[in-house]
Length: 221
Image (cartoon, rainbow, N blue to C red; front, side):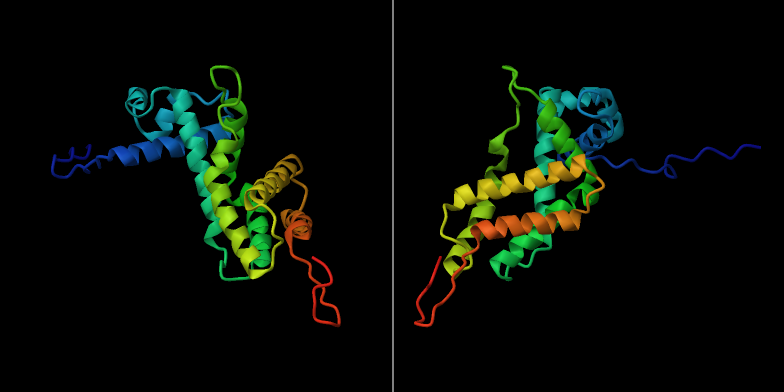
């Protein structure tokens, strides 16, 4: 004998998602699908299914798949940036903060594997109408601004050389990107050891090295 069908009052109420929740679900699904399938094989049908929405609903929030992909990559970039910053002790000496940040960046391929894979796939696969990469250096603008603030503090405190903070931020981010690319290509490399090597190179270049002679005046800078 089959069980009686639930009455309307007994049926679970399906929660109606807000527009913001649907957009977040679509972003989460895009990151997951692109990370698993790659940029070229990630279909909008599969993304909509993973998000639990109809494919037609995609067009209510995004003009096309390219806009969705770009937005998902930018959200993923913010997530990994926030993950690096979240555990930093910003009251520590600036060189210590920088070394810790480099270690956290080196661990992202493990701690935020989907976000990192999606960022890489979309950044290298998404093209502008003229064929150039759709995502470029402008995506780092907020990241560079935060880095500049840290570098300026180090300069004020005397722990960092008085170089151009924006140029320092660009070079620093370039070192992080190169480190992550190396770790992605060589998964056998120990991330912590790699981070230490990169931190040594970066800090050797930007840390103020002031030896004081017997007269109490700076002997070098």
